[in-house]
Length: 234
Ligand code: CDP
Image (cartoon, rainbow, N blue to C red; front, side):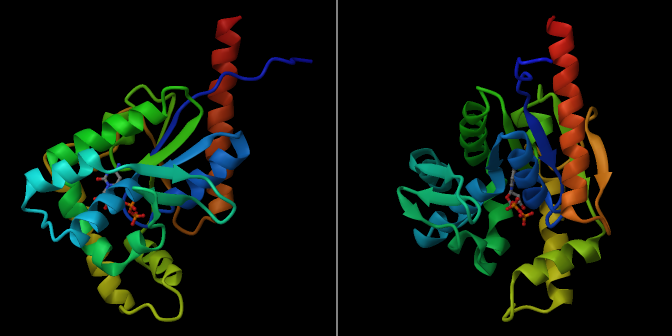
């Protein structure tokens, strides 16, 4: 029997809005005893704090300065991840419709992206992270041992988000689908670190496939890579 633990790897999961990245990434992290890092929550926190401070996405210098001094912490917890901004719990406020509508405009700003990417790389230094976002495999962790590009049909992605909004969604399914498509377009067309599949990422269409099943496949891929690295080290 092999009593040595497998070497830890980094896993990057990128894809468009509502593809199921955060649910799946959290399950993979749970099963591999890794740390889950939701990079979208970090951009959402910048957007929330900027809106609260009356900063618009056109004011790039002010938004960058805010991102640079903001203390963002991601804490794993039993009911999902908690997000603290300067010590204050903003976990639910970063999911508001206002933040949904403005986050991509703030995420386009070079200074904001630089700061977030630096924080994210630091979090992954020790390995053993599952990080989800838009540019993880292409920019933040180009050396991640496993990269997955996760997507689903536009209708299914809108439906998943719609269900998450609960009994009072405050928006119609059609309108939500349009807003998601608009955010995807902004993310794909921006100049810095756009949403694109990395050349060495594995493509995964999760349409009609339950999250546990998708997570099971990705965990298997991760374990296989860790075993290969372990065998090469011997
Ligand atoms: O969960 P959802 O798919 O709605 O989005 P998210 O992962 O919370 O990310 C919100 C927004 O942050 C995205 O639409 C991007 O504009 C931005 N983002 C980014 O630019 N780069 C990342 N690595 C993660 C998110």
